[in-house]
Amino acid sequence: MDDRLTEVDASDLLRLAVEIAREAGDLARRRREEGVRIAATKSALADIVTDADREVEQLIRDRLAAARPGDGFLGEESGAERGTTDVTWVVDPIDGTVNYAYGIPHYAVSIAAVTGAPDPASWAAQAGVVFTPAVGELFHATRGGGAWLGDARLAVTERADAGALLATGFGYDPATHEGDLARVRQVMPIARDLRRAGAASLDLAYVAAGRLDGYFERGLQPWDHAAGALLVTEAGGVVGGEPGGRPGRAMTIAAGREVFDAVASAIYR
Ligand code: LIP
Image 1 (cartoon, rainbow, N blue to C red):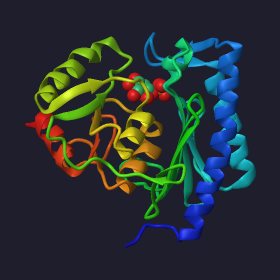
Image 2: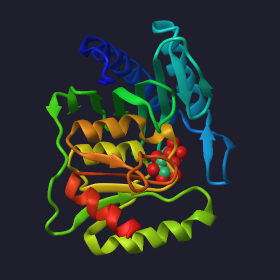
Image 3: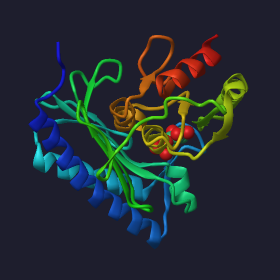
Image 4: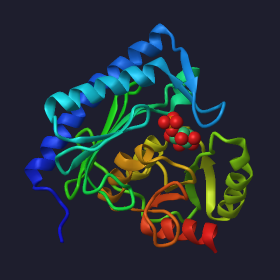
């Protein structure tokens, strides 16, 4: 069964996501310039949320509800709300929150529209946007419509003869770091180098753009990968998790086929 919306519908969803991502990103950038306050911590002391995270997500939620009142919503800061249509919006208002709080200009607004149950194990991403307010790059894709940076078509790298340039991340909970480091040790023999930039949606966008050969990380939330995973698959790449599985908390791996298989084999050999 083809779980693709009609091309018009997916393009409509993308147009709305792009418009809202730009407005939300502008708000995030202005709040950063004004000074950022840590509002609370979540799963661990290092897992922070700022007033801007909450304000930006509320803006996105309000704009989506006004434009498509029956759609569902799943956001990092305000949680989940089932809709009456088949579309759910999966939103990370400021991905790279720690970078944002420290003033490191590497963070993104990530918005994806998915259909089916709002479960990353089964949903079908139809449109996705990853927008970097500090740099002004807007990555976007629709299912079957390719992945783009502005008007430039994106493609993953197919070979990494000198070793793969890989990105990864570490969890907020210090108790997970030993396992994360063990995976780095497993993967380094196939790598030329490693990058840890702090925003999963941008790591995935960079794989789609060929700026990275691959990415792997344990512990991602659905909003971290919903839009970026569509960018990668629409750029000709592969996104998965544990062997044969989809991306999720246990693992997310994204790359061209050759590097994907090499990273998966190194981690799960
Ligand atoms: C972050 C991810 C990053 C990961 C961090 C955190 P947040 O998302 O983008 O890849 O390593 O632990 O999950 O919290 O900035 O939205």
